[in-house]
Length: 179
Image 1 (spheres, helix red, strand yellow):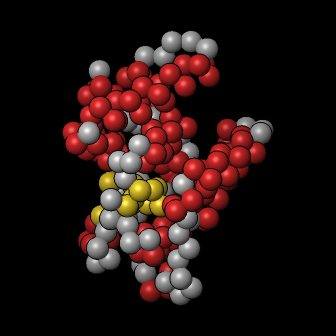
Image 2: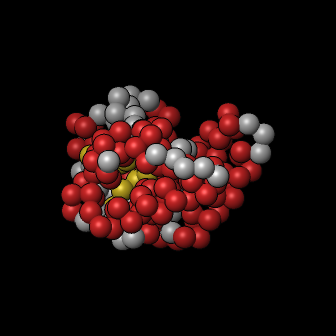
């Protein structure tokens, strides 16, 4: 399965690490474009000084870790596509160009299912996306979440309850399922 990761699901670090960890474990193939990665890097500016520099380093690391994830939509593809928010058409173009199955996003309003279906696509929020892996390959997803949880605790220098960590990453139902 191939899934485009929208910039809004790359910005929260814990969520990004779980999504890319699941991809690294072979649960799916991630796709993105330079523009999606640029949106993510620019969004980190609101975290304060130095955040964008760190994000740009993480972009380089993602590109190296997933060299097949980069999609460059053909010139003119965006012109034939439509979404309620024209600023999101590039995400749809990335999905079409990469022959994706899904767009993983929190932005349901701007990615109407009927419009995506015309291109053979669907959208899914990251919580449901990851919970499906919990159903299909629970051991693998639990290991991914465990690694990210351990990394978050090391960086924080304190114990972090898993459910609260996942809730902050907007993975409420996954957190509840993992206890």
